[in-house]
Image (tube, rainbow, N blue to C red; front, side, top):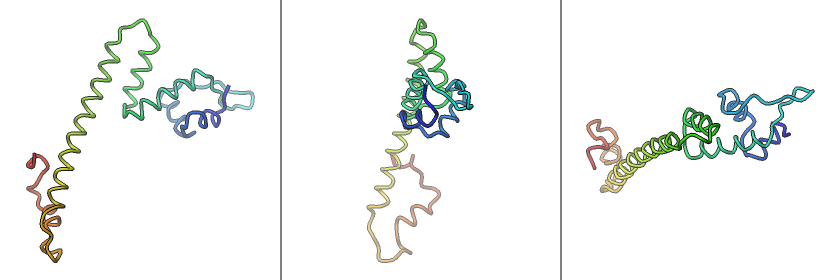
Length: 138
């Protein structure tokens, strides 16, 4: 059995994060020692590693909760887990597209001719122009 500090060291999760995951219901309420210290088993360590990996991939707490619930029923079909992954992939692709547009706009405004003074600076004028938007420069 591991203390919360040991679990933190083994998984790289902060103690406060472990407590947060317990409050959110992602980790079960741990057993307690006679001195009222939290005690964690290998199963909780594995679950915390699962949660951290899912968070590193950007999955939401709700999606992780669904995946944990699904993992408790290994006989169920994988369709729900696939759906969660596909939805997250669509979200990530949308963010990538917005970042590409942002990159394009920043390249456009930062590579325009450079005047001698800020009063004529294209970057300042472009940022002040409320009519410009990323969608206009696809």
